[in-house]
Every structure is written in C-alpha cells, then in structure tokens.
Image (tube, one colour):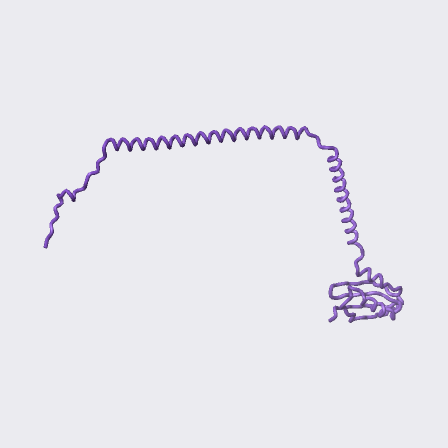
Length: 196
C-alpha cells in the first residue's frame, strides 16, 4: 500500500512572516531609545568620574601644599635645649661604655696571656730541693724532667701533683732516676699516662 503526499497543499507550505511598516518603525524607535539611554548613561558616568578626578586632584594639591608648609616649618624650627642636653648626655654615656668595653677587652687579652692553670699548680707544689728542667703536657700524657738533690722528696712531690685537676686520671707509670756525680744531683724523668 502506497501513500502519496501532495506537497502543494497549503498546510504543508512554509508560511511567510511579514512585518508591517508600523511595527518596524516602532522597533526602530525602541532600539534608538535604548541606544540614547545607554549613551546618556555613559556620558553621566564619564561626567561623574571627571568630577571625582578633579576633586581628588584638588585634595592632592592641598595636601602637597600642606606638606611643603610643614617641611618649611620643620626646617625653621630649632630643637629644645632639654633635648640637646639629653642627647649630649646619652652620647657621653655611650662613649664611656665603649671606652669601658675596650678597657675590659684589653684586660681580658692580658689575662689570657697570664700563666695557665697547670703552671700555677706546679708553682704551688714548688719544693726547694726539686727543680723542673723540661716538661711536656698533652691531653692524655705528661712528661716531666728535672733535678733534685734529695731523691727521697720526689715521691712526695709526685703525690702532691696527683691532687691537681690537670693530672686527675693520669697514672705515673715510669720514673727514672739518674745520678749525676759531677753536679751532686739526681736527674729524674717521669712519664704519666691516662689511667683506666
């Protein structure tokens, strides 16, 4: 079964949309009115922005003038005598503190060149019959050489050395005594090492 369609029927043909001249004129007037309103709004905004800019420029000019006046007033103003006196006093104090600091630094340098603690301890154990001629002091070992005219006093002298800080933890493990007949003295050689 075959169906036929007649494309020439009025219902199937596209309908033409037509606009009358009056509706076209109204539409044109509406577009023109909207354009004029938009242009007027832009002009109003531009005028408002120009007024704001002019106002800001006036304020800036006024502030610059005030700044110049304040700078001139500051240049012409003299500080009070109380402030000058206080400044001079503070300056003198700072100079005195710097001088004191230099003096203390110099004293510290001099103190650093003083005898070390070990030498002071050796001086405290001084015995008239025992003289040190040579010594080496290292962190883990010590070596002492000297002369004595009374060899029996060397062990007592060694015992007094053991009580000092530097020799704490060291053991006196070698002691050699050599008689020097031409000098009527005995030479001793002592080696101390770190003990357990």
